[in-house]
Image 1 (tube, rainbow, N blue to C red):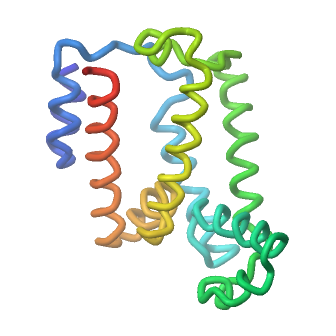
Image 2 (image 1 turned 90 degrees about the vertical axis):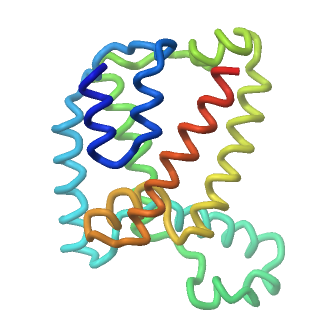
Image 3 (image 1 turned 120 degrees about the horizontal axis):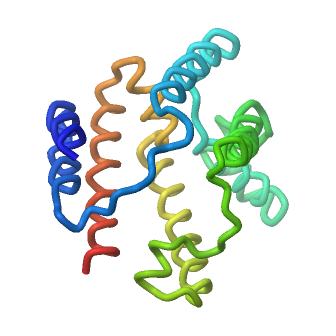
Length: 195
């Protein structure tokens, strides 16, 4: 626990350090995949993405593309009149491959790492809200996804766009965004699971 505390304090995330030091913090099994290996592979993936596509790694633009495709189906004139879609016509490109590969890669990692579980409600959620809280979990997940996608588009990037590509380029706005991601995540997790 002290390693987490000192690492978080050194990296400038005092809220994470406080959360890690609280006596109620749950101890988890070590990850099946080394976080150092995965972090290194993410760095290499980012370099390759910049080299071959001259674009940063990111997922939130894919959701804007999906919204644009749906908009073109439901209200094509209105969708075409929006400034964002005038500059970025909704078409499937490398972002779609990235998001789909992330889902498939997560499944493969869970299978090969022995972490795959076929559970609709995670243990931590079930302990707080009950094992039969699937509708609540689904509603919270859906609402959270909408808020995250909205926030990512407002921030000009998501955890992969800012957190991986932006911080790798030492972009100040990305570092500020990532610090805010952590602060918001820790605050909300404490609000949900500690009250």
